[in-house]
Image 1 (tube, rainbow, N blue to C red):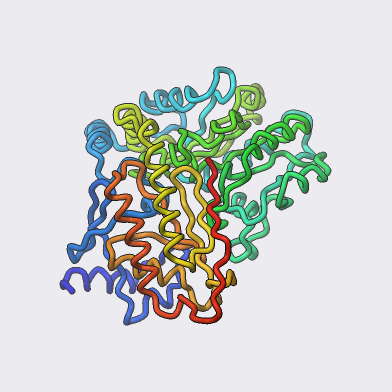
Image 2: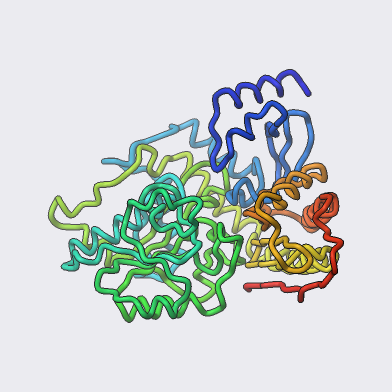
Length: 445
């Protein structure tokens, strides 16, 4: 190991605190984390000079690849002008242009207003606060509660965390908004809606719930229920936005327009932190008039010019490189490759795919789950590094969500690396009486 690598690791282990990380294991003397230093396209390099395919798009953010020249040039050009301008009491050209472009993806007189913030959690937080304040200023102050779906994930700020349905993350933080969790539309239809301001959902597919797609048509049915009950529909497209599902936004698959649309992660192509909450003109009007009607909420770096520059450049890349038009063939290749992977490995219990998002669930050959202490998903992802692939599991479901710019050969490399990693883990191919469960591929087009 190089001296500088060792120095960086020791400094990290002495002072850094990583997200969703068992720090005791991270800081153990025998643990040598990867020190990633630079990237190009779908590839990342560590401080030892080894190359890895970015199989989860740097936690689902990277769209067009690392160090994309057009996005980098746009950020550099803005940096020559200014790095930051307060959006409180001022505006700047790039924020106005970006808001106009985001609203332009939807029919006129639908989503007309954009509130910028910093990340997915704050995009959701904005929607929740807007929804509650709207009710207070529209004669329905009793409607201050929300509905969310079991096993969902919407962020870690207090309001967003109160929506979370994953107990290991959120059980100790249930002190935000009053929230009812449901598992289906049938459960939703039995609720008394008198106190409900909005229902929040990850459209088409739940991310942290091991990449589980919703059934086709569910989102359109939910929109219809919201129209009937007067409940606002809040779509958390932090993961699914910007091409991940095969369209620019997941809601476009079922021609659904939400009352609030929460965007982050891929909004800047994975280059800078930024988020946006889109809402309707009707909701916006309730915040006009008396001074106390204003939305008193914001962040120091709201509408940061560098983030706006990156976001506008990312949208330009979508057009210039025909990203969405070229994605259909890659989605098909991913489906075929994962089916072949499943056929070769009995411990792949189910593959859940929605567009260019895939979850590969590992179980014992008899269909039973591995004991949690086995941490099979983690072992497979660790082993994949030796084959040039970086990704992370959700329990024993391996996530494969590469940048949309990946080419055919690189995609084959990622799938091959997963297969090699699975084959390399001792003890997970059970030799007990062998009964292959019916293979299942859950494809959400």
